[in-house]
Image 1 (cartoon, rainbow, N blue to C red):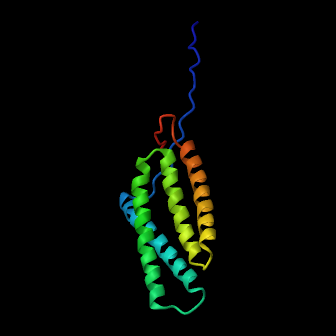
Image 2 (cartoon, rainbow, N blue to C red):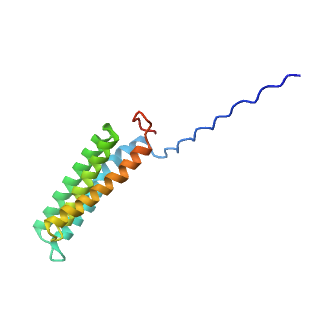
Length: 146
């Protein structure tokens, strides 16, 4: 009597997690997250700049301008970075994070050298973490695994 040969079992590919948000929600989040983070960043810059003193018109202007610039740069980096190779993708976010932190730190009345040093450290750490993330989430040809 003949029996069928055992089939080679290939492990099932893990299913992607379900996307519970609609496309409309993702479109709104693409604008809401940078604007919300920009508002937090602008408030933080203004608070660091006034050093516990009274709130002035120039302080409010600095906060709102910082909000607009931060949100615009975030959206620009978020639009540009995914089209780059993983090294440049990580470098772009690292530079953005380092510059943002350096400016924030410079408003605490710290010296320019310590602001540059702290911004460089934060930018380098951001680059290293994101490079590791992108390196482990791409195949050998550089295509992102989704």
